[in-house]
Length: 157
Image (cartoon, rainbow, N blue to C red):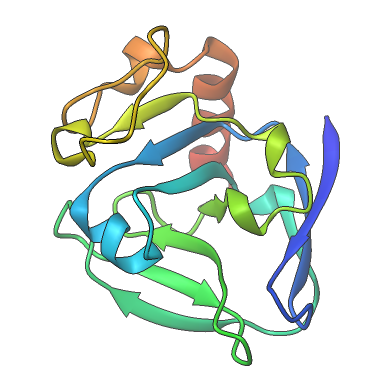
């Protein structure tokens, strides 16, 4: 387990997280493109119990998601940097850390590229990178340890 730090652009919001994440998504859906202002969003899914806010407070903004269930984007109230999201489908026990907000983003490369059917045509994925047109079955892609950790988090009160 590795403790990493992250935060917003103005450093008002800071946090610590225990890596590794459960799984890292590189999402190419059009909503992520629009919300990030980039060609994709890179989110490290992790148990909320492994993340600790060390300074500042978060502004929570309800936004739409590709699933139609929505998400809460947690941002710094001052600089508006997105720090993490909570997706309705996963629930509040899981956070989707914005990898770019980590002090060491190189520690969380993508495990899978999702919604590649709306990927920008100039984005070239590595030939050996797992990639799916929409979403995927966790059991087909996640390592057993991550599946077990997810089940433990769901079962915890």
